[in-house]
Image (cartoon, rainbow, N blue to C red):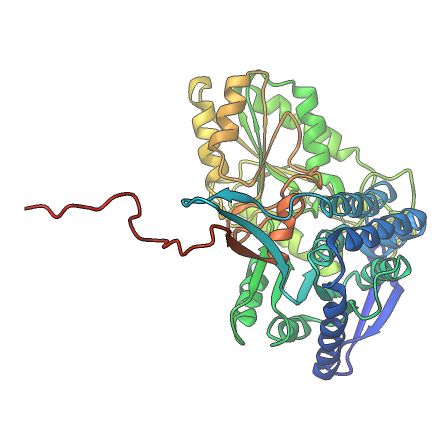
Length: 486
């Protein structure tokens, strides 16, 4: 860990360096946690609305910097400019939403069993929060974590992905310009060892991680090494779109293209499975494949292109290996399935938008950069079989159903085992005022965003106030004397 360099490059042209940082040593992590702890003590004494005002100013600074930050996201994370701008806008929106929570309910009140007594809950900061964030939303996801943690009264130490460290630095710099106190939010750079050291640090009382299932399990294990703490895990998904026979197929095709190939298929909510009735599957797949083949790949700073690169060459090779493994099992490539070289983007990490058909249910070969089609049975059994197919997966993040039948739509909403369900929209597009997260191996029960986003960064305290002026005995039978039977 000590002395190694974190080098981020433009995935469209990997010879172009974006930023270089030195990986944090254990001593530097200790110092960052100590700074956050010192600053947190004063920050926690501010009234919650005062904290909210500072967070609102963060949104203003981010808005002023939106163009330059979006360009940085495009260069470092490979998002096309429109998507990069959306990444930054989401952070701006999160600042506004969380600032509003500063004057919202901070707990609940409850009637008590006894007269002249009241019960209520309130929230308190945990102290210092350690965060590990991914590269696919290098500004938005830090905002999902940092703003609620700050509103709750905490200090922060964040380790961004080694693929997008400059984006996180830019975000934190905007927070400092907006008046977030010095030392309250700290960035440490590095790789897996750095993250493990942060998660297991005895001064860190909560950990929030977004990434893969294997890494998430290691994070959780590291976080519990030195004692109990809050651990929030967001571990991705394998998201399916269900198409009923009565669906608007043009709308389906548009949604599938955006859901599967937006952000080069690298969102945790990206549409990677299509479940359609066999009566419509063939024509639908042909339409989607034709549109996917027409998507323009290239430099994400070029406003005429549709899809940018994946994050690095290793990802390209991994995707291609998965496609080849799927075809060896009998899947057919309707379009794509090739590594693409783009003029002017030497060595860029480009993979053709890919549609596979005939992938067997339960196959381990589930490429992130392709859309898989699976026809299902007769019309009367479609919904049951489709829901069973969607649920036959270790993840439970997002799903979509396309239908004009409100009864079928509500059946799908109630029965699909995912944290997010869309009706007549693709599996991507979560909004910051609703909770974000999933079931099964997607996470461990916490939700990000929405009013529930504060839960992973605060402790709930129950308070009882007895103003009767006399002892009232609780947890015994106070209603009447129970006569002994017999």
